[in-house]
Length: 355
Image 1 (spheres, one colour):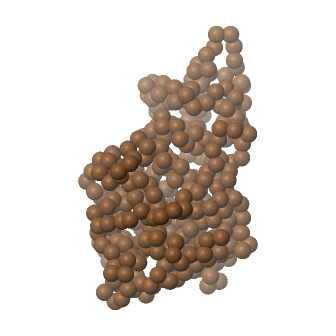
Image 2 (cartoon, one colour):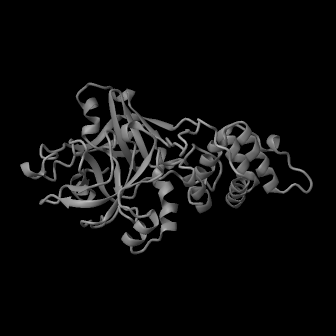
Image 3 (tube, helix red, strand yellow):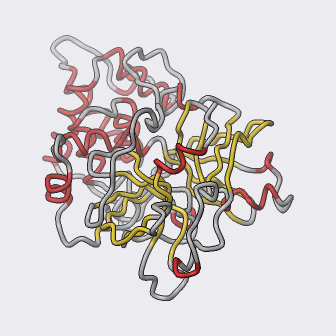
């Protein structure tokens, strides 16, 4: 696969974004924390040498040594709310695998957000999205796995059926790893830095409810609220309290954080667009968009046409305001599948025992 070659205008855009997001001290920390590189050795300060000139020398070195994509990721992680860095990372597809956006609606992302969110604009959407991306993980279980997402500094929400191999003794909890920050560029290349990996705590299972026998055929019956197919699991480290990329003395580095579950869950209706962040089959993070098509009579299940695969179970489902509205857990077993299904998060909140 050919190596990506940045253009002169792209390098200028990236340099200006770095200049806006960092000063000499914090950029020095970025290089040391992520790459064990000394800024002064790459580009020594000198009389009349502007900060942007030194940034350009770092960009050139990173390009020659093939860690420029990693530098984009690192800068984006360290300053997740910086819209210029977010735009650069998203243009490269560094947060989403394959197609940057898997969209069945026929509309652009900007149009979808504008049509479905009353108090948010597409620019704010793209600024919020990177924070959520850092809160989603692949739960790597020997012989299986699924997607999960932080709902507390050390708490991950996923499906009960995702962790069934552990509960049945077919896999050991100590062998499970939750992998965050797994990304892929549009050209198929993957940044070389290893994703952040966290093990499960000794007392890993906080709370769970089983799925329903009716989940794959709504005509057979109605899933009960107690059949909400979720598992709340605890990590051995409060990764949500640390900045993406690990601990640092950079006081401007924000914690990774976790998905907000406080307050009322937004209502959903047929025709609303939904957004899923997922690791299908353990692949790099993907964002898919779809439309709500149906509910069961009890209101305990919602179906939509957003794409998913095996391994997508446990993915967070967001509305156009990027508010958590459902927990993805199933797909049509037919080929090709006609629907995907989730448990409305309002149902989960009714029955879960949140510590």
